[in-house]
Length: 253
Image 1 (cartoon, helix red, strand yellow):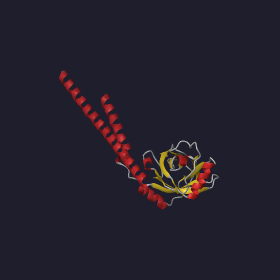
Image 2: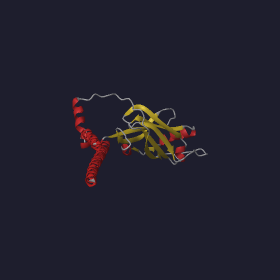
Image 3: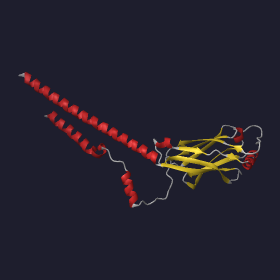
Image 4: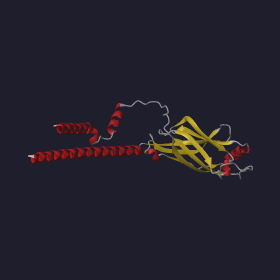
């Protein structure tokens, strides 16, 4: 009489194992679908980052008088997404124009050196607005000839592409002990530039622009289609919960 009892128990155990395997397979499928959905979203974000580039040419100014008489000395070109993320920050780049100081400008630089003054440079904080607040940096004027006119810029930008800081240095770390006298004539500057991402800064105030109904419809059309998991995840999770409850009732029975 014990044999039928053990046979029924074995059949019940096999049934429960099959159900558990089915549940595990379903959960694994959900995980795969979720991973695929995230990958697709990441790819879409990357595409949007690369297609939504902001290119701006910014005037870099310098003060050769030492009294705030700012004049253009070249241009700096900023390229990057309109909204910089941890992924798209590698797309941010800055290029700077290589310039030559004229003989008149070199004479003014010599005057700054003789008077022990600073050579100052500045640029706008909003690359799309010249009238925005200016970011300034300076070095002792004598350090330019001490470094054979090799200068280094590092531009610090935030996630909105706004300039939050400007680091300026030369290959020399100190001025020569003896008075510096330029040879005369024009002077070629050798300039290198790099860009750093700062921590998230506050968004600068901008005037809101009203969107037309046509623009709203176009933005809705441009949104990427939802994946299968994004559309039906509530129903799938509900099915898994229901299957778990039914299994619990059978175990009690």
